[in-house]
Image (cartoon, rainbow over all chains, first blue to last red; front, side):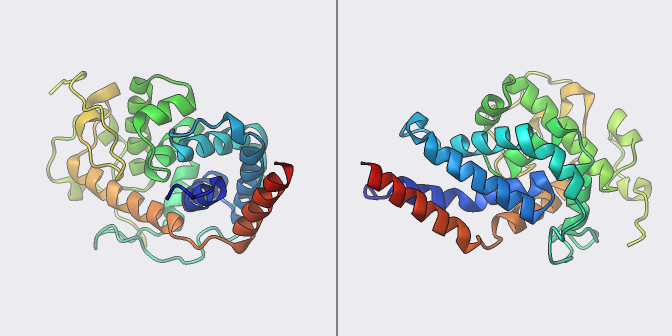
Length: 184
Length: 72
């Protein structure tokens, strides 16, 4: 694979970059603009990429910084106006779950930006805690605590638990009895 | 139970598989909730990652690459 060009390597990262952008922006059209900006910037700064380091982490850094500097405000304006996840299929989260991917997006959008970001960095771009810490400019301990808070909040927004579950030690095994019933 | 420092250092790239850090900040999810959340979130991530990439991006990358070659 030594004849693989920089462009080839970038193509291989596209699914992760675009997924990250869609989830951040909550809109396909805005996400595609963001990805395009990211690719152009990456090329113009290609010589700042250290060979043998993680290309995905480098690209994600550019995309993330571009998002926060010029897309975040716009994304709040266009959200809901285009159909983010075309198919309203239920996620394969188990028979008990009637949650759709759109429900997950809506729950993510309710999170604090730093909480949403950390979930996406770990879950979508599949970067390590170390890489995520570097990208966010925080200590690894902060990454972990944000991740835990983000998970708890996401579970709450998805209706997987009652708010009291967050503050109390959930040793209660009979969780089903405490779970709010979902209309859908 | 109050194991604040015993967390594993490696990332759980698969979603929410680790139970290690859940005591941090006093935020603890029931393992069942955590597992369910992990499945739901993983499905969401996988759906996004597997969405087809529009041709315009491969075209753009090819153009950028061609431009670069011209410069050299």
